Length: 109
Image 1: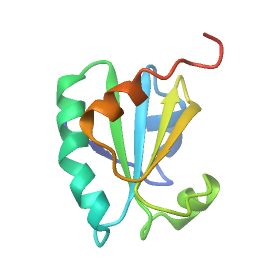
Image 2: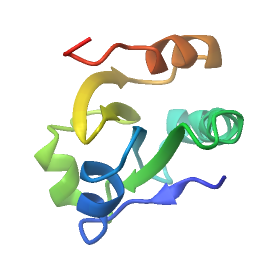
Image 3: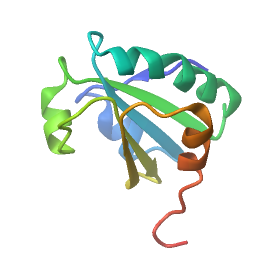
Image 4: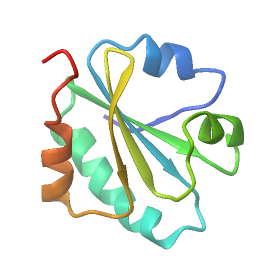
């Protein structure tokens, strides 16, 4: 499954109303660590197809969304479960740490 481009126009449908887990990647094309993280996220999306949606938010194009979530550094990943943000990760991390990050429990768990 390919990653989804998330914009202000589709954010509610693709993230807030999504059933299951959504991992949002706030990134920019000029960001070196973002480019390093991209293939890792694509691999995770493919390996977890059906249980994980990976969304990409280009902060240059979607400044309002970035501001809404207080994005000051990129890449920043925010993990959503049933439309609720449950965890945030800033900066590049290896795949093993991302897999652990994806196991972050929901607040009600």
